[in-house]
Length: 362
Ligand code: PEP
Ligand code: MN
Image (cartoon, rainbow, N blue to C red):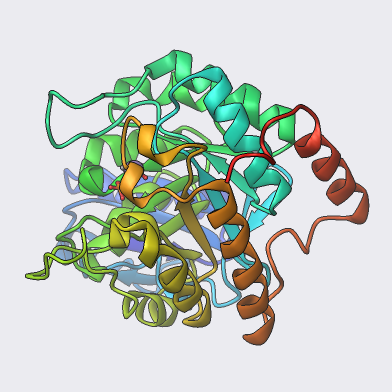
């Protein structure tokens, strides 16, 4: 059950609604979001709130189970998520780029330098890796988060990294600007709640067998913690096709855009699993109306400890960014980084170019 309070509702009216629900033996809590005050009561039935429709301060009462806070009608202007000096959502295309896994301080700094120089707006890097096989590289944990943060600071980019365990959320939030909930964790509800409470923006990836409705309901868990900063990510779904790692469901972009106010980005790296397909699907995603991209890169993909086959080389990433800029403008969007002030752009550029090595790799 979800109740929306009127903008003019007083604290007294809100408390009256809460105590009316509690009297019927149910629990409910207040959720404050930029677009309004809500009272959420999981499992509270219509009978428990009979009479609250039309009560003082109450705008509406709803007992459906579908997405409500994430619904487009809730915030028709659209949510724009601030990540450091960058924005995700709104006019400008965001590009999150970096290695699948942070492998060393040098590796992530090298990646940071070239992705920043070529126009990425966010640096990504995995520290806690959700690997299909327990024998595969599992990520370097907290040490990797420290290197990621340092690399992000060196090139003045915000950083995003995946969390797997609710117990790591608070610690990770101390290092990153955005917490990523990966495809495999999309319905890990304690993790969604913990990420929601972290105070950090959350990048929520679609599970590889999850419907769009399920993705929106997973986002609803985060929003219900009073965290408005949720970014959705289409990253490919499992189909009968084996020629690619996943099938990138670009249908999801216009469908989500028609259903939610949350920014939608696309990950063509996991969506295809093949380096040679990444640029084409990245361009298609921007043309389809995505608000941004997440792309894996590596200075030497053949030596990558994870996802080398889908990682772009520095030269490949530079080409992709040139193409994305053109497509963004062609569809009436601003190219990545175009919203930054000239001063900020110059600082990023010189920070990215400081140090040697990034430009040489091909
Ligand atoms: C990742 O971004 O590194 C990742 C593991 O992605 P996904 O959760 O989409 O598989
Ligand atoms: Mn990966």
